[in-house]
Image 1 (cartoon, helix red, strand yellow):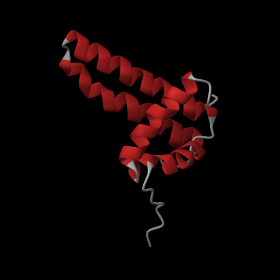
Image 2 (image 1 turned 30 degrees about the vertical axis):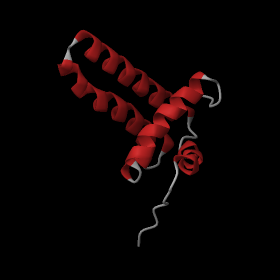
Image 3 (image 1 turned 135 degrees about the horizontal axis):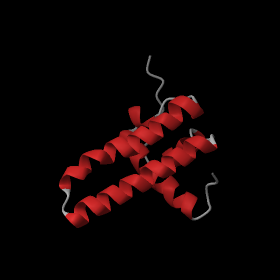
Amino acid sequence: MDNVRQFSRFADFYPYYLAEHNNSTCKRLHFIGTSLVIFLLAFGIGSGRWSLLWLVPLAGYGFAWAGHFFFEKNRPATFQHPFYSLLGDFVMYRDILLGKVSL
């Protein structure tokens, strides 16, 4: 049986995504990982050091998955909703910066 929730719009997915991120340590780890992703992309592209770009998924997923497996104790949404989950991470990052999501 497949009991994976399906979403036709990101606006419907995002509340689910936030509900999967209740633990403050998990959210902090997501924030650190996304900050590293942004830095690595900017630095790697800006400096022409393309070899650094292989670190992008390692930084992003490494911190986020550690947060889910060790602190949130749930399965990352990436496995069932990869695109929406990636978008959700950047939207949550923005919402943390704007104070809409608390750490």
